[in-house]
Length: 181
Image (cartoon, rainbow, N blue to C red; front, side, top):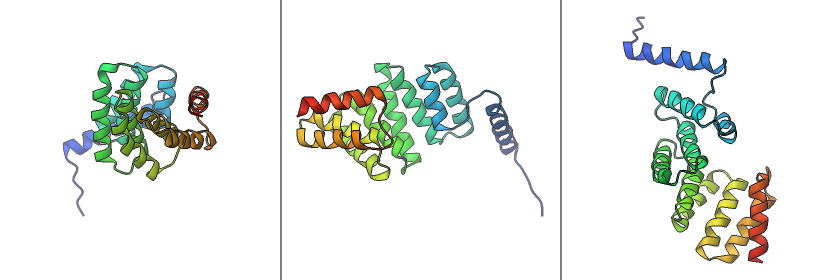
């Protein structure tokens, strides 16, 4: 039996090994939770480097594509919201079962004021994997669309869901719910 590796596959494996080794020495791995932790710590340049490194090895990595849009949204650069939308649409094509990709697209559309356009993507996210964040975003989308009853329903579900929303989002959901009632 003869095994042959092309120069491209050897290079790809070398880069992959470098990333695996680097991840043990202070460089973030491809774990979506680690990207989120860096984003929350506002280490945007570090996140950008980690995402670029991951996408250089695997251009179809949905976690990295989603993290890229989370980074855009966290930086609050409104001019980049269309870029976030485009990247998330690509992530959905590459990972059609990713609840996070649909949630991210819904969020990006909401940030652009496209609440009705966000609804089918948020509902798809919910059908794949329910989360407090999806319920919260659906509450916001229905509220902006003028459907008070659905908005109340989804805010209540968001507040009752475990694991819970973060403090700031939870407080906003409670405030919105009180205003709607």
